[in-house]
Image (cartoon, rainbow, N blue to C red):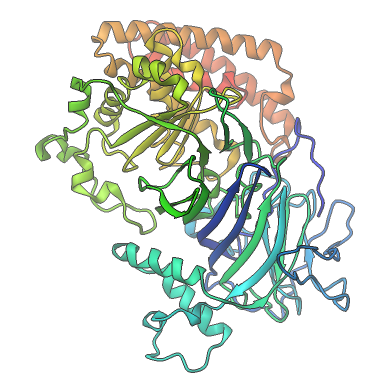
Length: 604
């Protein structure tokens, strides 16, 4: 399954077989080594398999076939050589046809037979033409496939969660006398389904289970885009161990993280978020419908600050001379691609004097002001949701911090610090409850390839936004704040639909920024119409200078000729709609996001 991709043409392959088993929680325990430019440690994955995935020993389902109509056989891995551990690999006695996986060109058909285990959200799980369906076919062992690349996997083992003291509280038995695979899986099943109001207890159990001893190494193999794991005799996802530990290390050339120096010349590392998401940081399930929580302990030299997309504002714990530990967690299930980390000699920027904006940060709306924002019971999966918390509903400005290299202190104090409270307040006045309880903002190194990137609880901003007047900084900050609602709290089921969140964020950056500036309606309208005109010009330039195949995504998913005609029709509709919008005060505003979307190469 060693798929070679053309980055200019092919989609990112989504290899994880999420139609059979889902990761519900990750526990990461990592060390950051700047000298070797490696992050190493362990990750423990806790799974849930649906009741629909029962043993099908008499299944008549045909094995997956590649484009060449030959079964893509699981290759024999080369032995792993590690001074740390004696890693088991597949026995040479294993038959070559024991398990089969999909290769290039296969379509994801898991949604057609009802085998998705992410409820009704699972339709359209993979936008990629590269996917895997590794369910049980006859007497074969179940094969777990995780998205993974640029990682050195050293060892995979089952975790003996039954050995954790007090874990019997999660079972129907007062004492654990006979420990079996079924009992371990039952414990994990009870753990991942604890009610939301027991989240602290759940996190504690996860941490303790992650430190439990192993109870048997698992067979594994890696290729360019995936990590494949199996246990002899486990023929279905239900039989497969529901808690496994993977010992691994990243590679200096791994494409999920960037090792560089900040503007002060000090070493740092941070996640890029693209083009391959986090699969070169830890093995995971990458399809956006694979929602999970996580907790992480990260150790680094005491001179470094560790920032992550966790919902707590972590403080360092001194471990030994010259080394500190940082712990973060999240309780809101999110796609693995939203996991973010940045380690460097960051300095927290604080205003020199207390301003009215600082006082505003302490202000919450009165209940009468916020009643209309209270939505009652949400329809999503159960977790400690802020939208159901009345105190969160009234919080106009969430707690926030700004970090940057020390050499940018003056620029941050002059431009960025004073903009954060009014921009957060403006977002709340438009959309209501902030989806996340806090916000860190980091000015990332100069090699950051964008003006900004939003993740849960943290925003990366380019140093470019600190130059000139406050307009660039304010609009970009508003754009990234808008992604808390559109792109994070609400996200696309399919990577080809990312234009939706970008469209909403582009539209809302103008709305938020106008309110943050306290512009009167006429000034706001003029500003937004000007930006709409600029975007229209950029759209025309993009269409003139982009080849047709770069103006759409996933040509293999639809008829190319129909898509070509659809593109022409949509472009004409946007153009005529924009001209009409110039005569209607709200028209230009509402069309802004759509124009922005097409200008970056997506079809609406």
